[in-house]
Image (cartoon, rainbow over all chains, first blue to last red; front, top):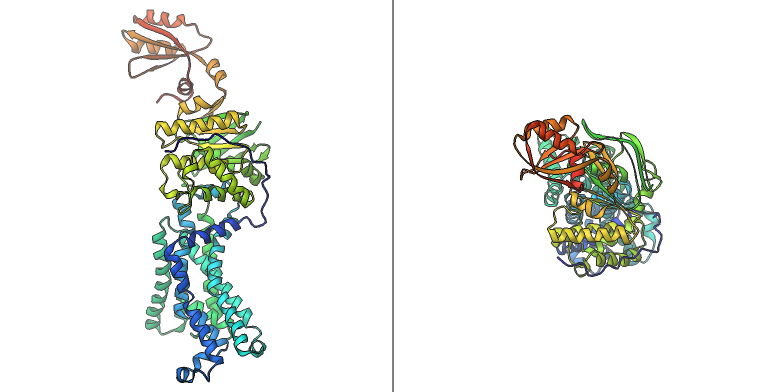
Length: 290
Length: 303
């Protein structure tokens, strides 16, 4: 152990201030810690692969003459309409990539604090429970929004640039709002979903598995129940299907499953409420065993 | 008074952790002493607002423990008993992070983190990942994060637990320096009597959630009883019963040394009279200086 080399303690001359956003240091630190993981950087980069393909498609859609040979059989795919955006945002692979990014970046957000007893350090500061949770959630917001809202808005900008006119924007002026709305919805849902699981265990690896397992199990359950009962309402058991239903609604498209999108919204909102209740109980400075 | 509580009570389910504790703590280093489960950590947690008392009230630096939590937490540095850190961080980032959460500007927090890490002896290891720190280094780190925002009071919960003798001495030396030279009040919770005895000017002893004794160490030693140590030849049991009937507490140590805690108003000759009555010979007799251990034994019991 290092010996005490310096006794130079001096009082701090500054004044402690009340922060407008006390949760911000938590968010910033959470994001920085995620980027310190080498594997995460690779996964994060991977998450933009679908965006590049869709962006390339937008370019091709404006240069059909140049790419005639390539797009002859896939003309429908590169018709850039709200449906195109709905396809991008509700692509199962895209949703899987979001889960993958969050499994690396957010699984340990609360579970690490539980494991290393650091909650009591947070709450010995002038910090409320809501600040702590908002700080952790904002880490998820950051990653989800950067994977969803950013490419979505970039698509619109590039569509306008490639087209050289504002026609697309004038045809669908509500589309940026749909993109922002659905991205925000995904961010909020995944924040509650991931933090709920993160608070359920002190073992981050176990949480990582849970994040994938819960998502895929809900899908498998949907498959089994659908095969058994042949009712589209069984889609309500699947997280993926519910997200797709809400996405279709926000982009003004026909839902994939013959179930009102509002039901899916209620199911996902229910998960968020349940998560909020459990998070509120789990995150406290002292673990009181009665 | 920097800390004042009145009729403070708290229970974990059916288990009473604090039962009507009333006390006023003076300036300087104060020891919070008691056996495991006495309610020391619970008291610290109530003072920090981690737990809401079932009954009673309290103030820390004139801030109410129910209403002014943010102000209390700004003014108090807390070093918890258990190991706590954030995986994947180095010590500078960790310390600055908690400085920032306390309300320090980011740059200031970083500068201050370097200073306190040097102060606690982690200067050279400040860029190492916390996951690789030893138990002693983690203790120092906890002290650093408690000091980073320059608190007026430090709550130290078992600061020397899990430390080897050298590490323990180092931490105690730091705490002594903080409490004597840096004008920071220290509330040191421990069940290690020697730690408190070496640092604190006053002590609060809790036992089974109740206040067992409180005051300046010197006063507590003086007012309660006189302590005598002796060795006997003969039937010690009858002698013990005789003395106990006179209001004395008699404890036999492993080496057959007998300690007699005698009410201060009693006469020491009563011991010799009891020996004469019960037919035992006193082979060794000395009036002992009461230590905190004796005081603790007197109010809590040696078992």
